[in-house]
Length: 183
Image (cartoon, rainbow, N blue to C red; front, side, top):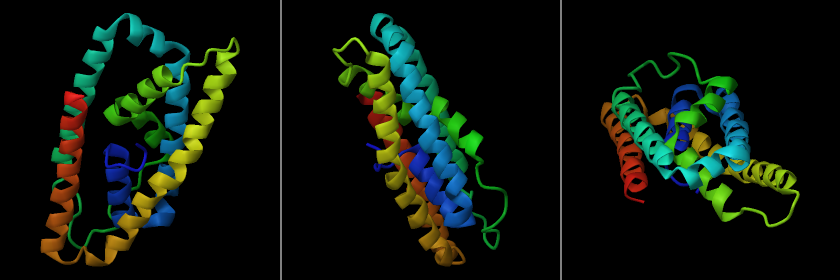
């Protein structure tokens, strides 16, 4: 799931376009570490809440989906002509905190916490190892999206291509939201 389109990967691609790969590295590590922390916390506590009070998960899903659609709307026009380097890339802490409003990250964390619930007594160590392993898998997957974005930088001066890129990634966010809503 880490390599499929979603908010993190879309934002990394746009960051790669606007700032290049090197300046996007803190964003990449923020996602990876933030998501590992989210998986750990979900496994250690929220998993119980979601299993016993599924309505909480349902409300959280809809809040996250509204935010996801807002991001898709904001993405249109986000790559301004001749302003490829305008603004600042997401910082490590900002990317880490974004995981808490990212519906795809929540879906992964909840799936991991329920699908891989350990039967052994030392479940804390098992969950921490699981979060660490997920982070190791996540890092190269999301890095590909930033590299992809960096490779698109040279095409941004073309207004038609710029619009196609913006609408394509906004559409990916909307489709991700729809998929998460129906599953």
